[in-house]
Length: 329
Ligand code: UD1
Image: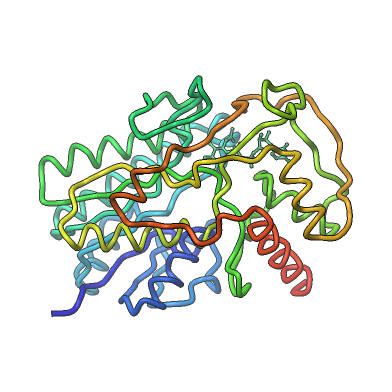
């Protein structure tokens, strides 16, 4: 018997659309559910598409039945950390309450496998700057807390039912489809590589460097940047793992090493062939000096091995996408 269908929530978003594309290339049956609040219908390159909310129990129940779904990959969420601080209930509603309703339907309709996009934000500020899966969770913003609450719901539901899950804690995702079919189209972006790429193509006047006095090698913040294609692939590997009867687990997704803001700027200058205009600013509130994954577990458990662990390649794909967006205007 062939595999059943996969419901992808948030499949029209940045990471979701890259995963849907890879699932389609792997021959999977997919249905995407997305309310298009930030997603883009055109980014869904495979399978069927339904517009709606993950919290809409009737709609989700109908999709699970109509498509004979046994796996859910859940991306749909609000993801802007500063917004979560000013409007926490928006985040608890969409990221926590809606997920609760989604899980209720999964239980009701006998969904077996659940893959969840969690975040390194559940760790807050680990003292050493490195986080493994057993580093204590201590989120410092409602975004991180809302995701951690979903991890807890999954833990409890998996113990009370047949559902198995993989929660993937993403580090700093960047870059785009190397063939430039889809990319990161977030309006008012704040993430470093996206913002730097916008500055490089002239959409922004300059790039601000937030903090040059951290206790790091060159004084700027250090992060574990991972290419979105490798992150999407981690979801496919998690799917194989669950289908093979793997037990519920939580895994970091990162390369296990980091780059400073200045190193990212050097990469953008190198790849783009001309220097960015840069302005140094004080530290941004809530930024840890360094956050790097300890990510051996995902390599061992899921047999995941990254293909794009190369900062210049990450930056190149981000720049190519930014050029494409400019041409479309
Ligand atoms: C942010 C979130 C994190 C979330 C992650 C992925 C915060 C505090 N953290 O990570 O919870 O999991 O996105 O969605 O919002 N920087 C600049 N100039 C810029 C932008 C960033 O210097 O214009 C610096 C930052 O100070 C930081 C580094 O670049 O040192 C990375 O920042 P960013 O790309 O915003 O990601 P995080 O803050 O690490």
